[in-house]
Image 1 (tube, rainbow, N blue to C red):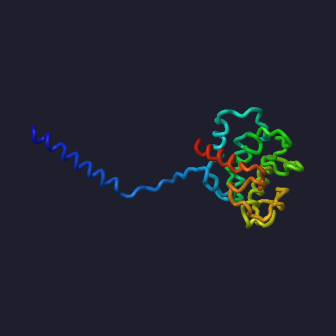
Image 2 (cartoon, rainbow, N blue to C red):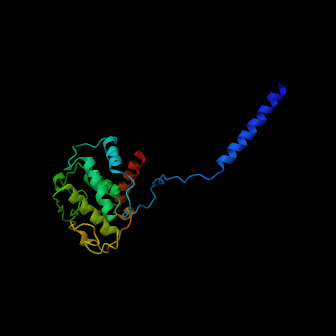
Image 3 (cartoon, helix red, strand yellow):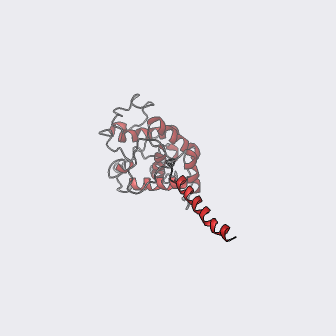
Length: 216
């Protein structure tokens, strides 16, 4: 009996050594993208990291709920899908563009000089000195104009609002006012006179995008 009890720790030692050898082998690299931090640079051109369904779930479950009524011309799930689709066509991060629209419209409650029926999700045409918001016939056209405008800021290859270099005919009425093309390749570059005057414009977009990423 004493011999059997003494042999038990030896067996456990060999089992532990065998397990250690197995764990020392090659591991599969993680496919989870790294988290976004306040210092992370986020390019405007690129693939979306959040799906339309994930954006919709985050939008509908986020607390606290914004005051006022949702006033976009299409449901939020449809709108999120349009942003992802239009962004993918032009190579623009459509998920972040959706977040930009949230910031611009106050969670699609609108108000001020831009109304929901205008389908203007990015304040296109609204300036501090002469607010004249652009009006688009439907939600997809409004999103397309926003995506084209983003590409003008981010992509120096977008030399003209024509096909090519764009995938679809030009619907952005202020595309040609962005000069030089590619002046702001990253979301972090916006604000301080680029798209918006606020110095915290980019931070407000990227903080919400980081929140949406974490919600997935």
